[in-house]
Image 1 (cartoon, rainbow, N blue to C red):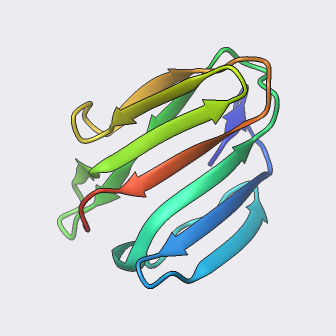
Image 2 (cartoon, rainbow, N blue to C red):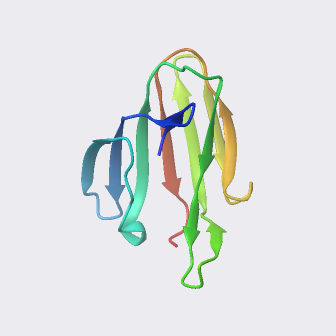
Length: 112
């Protein structure tokens, strides 16, 4: 979910599975039901209203615990390019935004 000041923002998502199937979604909130077959998610970001974006990537285990996913987060715009491995950062990272539209790509490095 992408929010600004606590309000969900509608976003464009592109989900790509390991077998190459793609799904385009436009929604304010979307639960990924088939995480085991997911390869990547790309989110189109509007021109920034804020100076940063917090990215969280966790899976809830059968026991109800949260564990960080091994995800590479890549943020690109006209003037910025950043990346972080969320497994190395406890499943969360804060990336800086500029005032231009861009995209955030999340790629699973290991299957959950």
